Amino acid sequence: MESRLIRRLAVLSCLLVSSVLTAAAAAVDGYPGLYAEVQVGANAVTHSERDFISPVASVIGGVWVYTGIGIEAFADAELARGADGGFEAGVSNAFGAALRLSSPPSGGLRGYVVLGYVDFTLAQEPTRGIGREIDERFSGVRFGVGLQQRLQRFPSVLFGAEYRNFHTEEAVQVDGLVFGLRLDVR
Image (cartoon, rainbow, N blue to C red; front, side, top):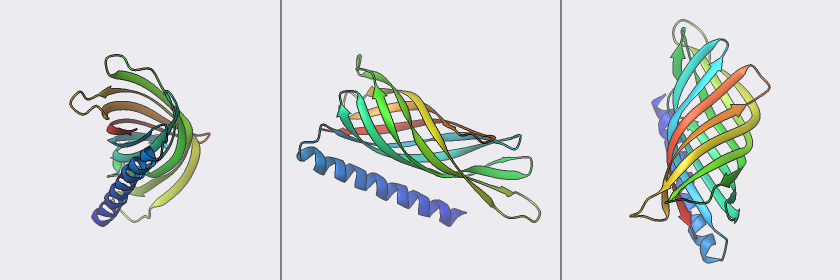
């Protein structure tokens, strides 16, 4: 478990660094504006009449294609699994793309909505006794709504909070609350 966590944190760190470097290089070439974001929070998974809450980390990279309209790619990784009724479960990873619709800023504060596609793996295993891990892959719609505040001391950095939902046609529900820092590169 610990080596898996270290590997995932290393991958997320590399993705973040490469996103920031790519954004900086592209901004010099005249792109309308790029952004990179790192988030941490928790997912709540309801599956098989059980509820699991597990910490998650996310990396997002995007480009503003028009004022307040961005296109982004994201990757999530679990930091640990939640437990309920003799089982541990969580969203082990999630990937996708989305459209970000952001309101005009007011006093440095802005709201946004994220609509997109998500492909995620739900892992579940017993906490005691004999059993094996079961991984199920799902895909569907990612919806998020959040607020971000621009930091006065660092005007290209925003602090934010987001509620998110992964909606599928299956009998699984994934909601999350994450907090993050976004870097705008112009």
